[in-house]
Image 1 (cartoon, rainbow, N blue to C red):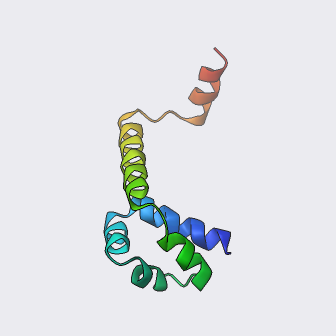
Image 2 (cartoon, rainbow, N blue to C red):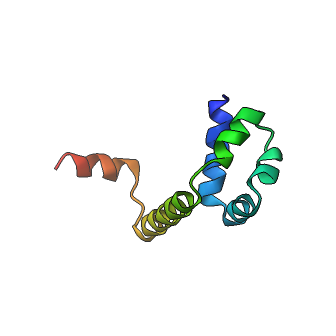
Amino acid sequence: MSAPGVEAVLARLYVEPAFRERFLAAPEATLAETGLAPEDCRALAALDHVGLALAAESFAAKRAEKRKQPQRGWLARLLGRRR
């Protein structure tokens, strides 16, 4: 199992809606395009599709919330932790 390759595909499934839609419609065909080993493709094809969709929605909401927060520099973050 190629952990970095599998993690990269999982990340794409979580953050790229078009890739996720293709995967949900045709898991084997979509995964075959990734260059992963056949056993990795089989493992990912068996993912819980409902759980994948829920996780992707949750991550998207967290990213959207984070974008709303003002960005602080490293010094401000450091000083803020000391209080």
